[in-house]
Amino acid sequence: MRSSHRPVLVGLICAGVAFAAGCRSTCPDDLLECRARLGDIQDQQARLRGELADLQQQLDVSRQQITRLQNLPEDKSGLLVKTQKIELEGLTGAYDDDKDGYDDGVVVYLQPIDRAGDVIKAAGGISIRLVDLSGDEPVVVGQIDVPPEESLELWYGRLLTNHFTVRCPFSQPPRGQEVTVDVQFVELLTGRRFTAQKTVEVNGGPSAARTQPVG
Image (cartoon, rainbow, N blue to C red; front, side, top):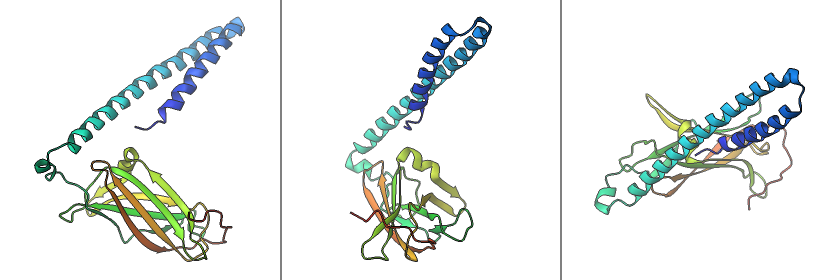
């Protein structure tokens, strides 16, 4: 479950408290407006509390389903569609968002593959590292981690297109003309970890100082 609602809810609660204090001290002419605005804040608080409760319920149901699936007998678990490997589509490569001639990162097209060799829409977490190997030491020039609840929003399944599309921006321009794309996918159903790697050509433009060697 995304936690983005929590800070918003806390902020609204704090705003409501502060606003209530202000209403007690404001002049009579502004009292009605102040109360109306306070009512709006309270309505937003109630709505966000409801959304948060719904999301928590969905998460609890999903966890129960995953637990049941993971505890299936051996003769039944083989019927489930599971990831056997992951592949990076050939179109995986650099992108230039601002069209200035210098690449801004790498877009990764990730495909989970089942035992029959078919692409499947498997839930799982995705981690990507972009590594520049052109110098004496490898340098991480980009990294992104996508949790399972967000990765499914990155799935594209139209006609012959079936993959996760993940953009990994450069944290610093690569010095070399290639970067190694290291991808890790952890399947939510089984907890199994899958990896794939691909080298792509890039144009990082003016080099930045290397500040993040691979540990």
